Length: 163
Image (cartoon, rainbow, N blue to C red; front, top):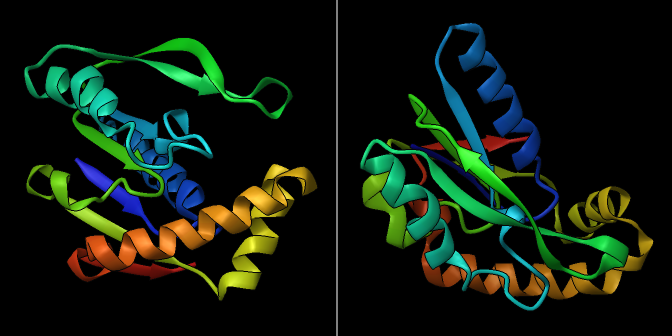
């Protein structure tokens, strides 16, 4: 299991997709689970038990995982489609808090992705998510800065990438 973690707008999704593509071209069965499928503006990290119970524990026991994805119709989070995660050779968990301390013992590798300063990452995130999300993204970035400081995620990374 590989976690690709780092602040919003750093390039985690891009790196995780490239890693998954590279592994698949080598015939390595790979699954990617984005933390964006779980997190909401009001629940940036407390959703973790859903991932552990629905995906990590079943996969560890050799059976497919399953979770209900968060979708954003009209910009409002709501329960969406069910996603089945077949047992892969490599599982990539991608997104803010994916490399949290509580999962560290399960990880083969924690990749920390960083890019630019707060303002640059905010601009990238707004370009991705839309201008209406700016205020929420500012709040999110303030939250994640505190989260990473307390969790010590970057310091535990075995690989650090600047995108």
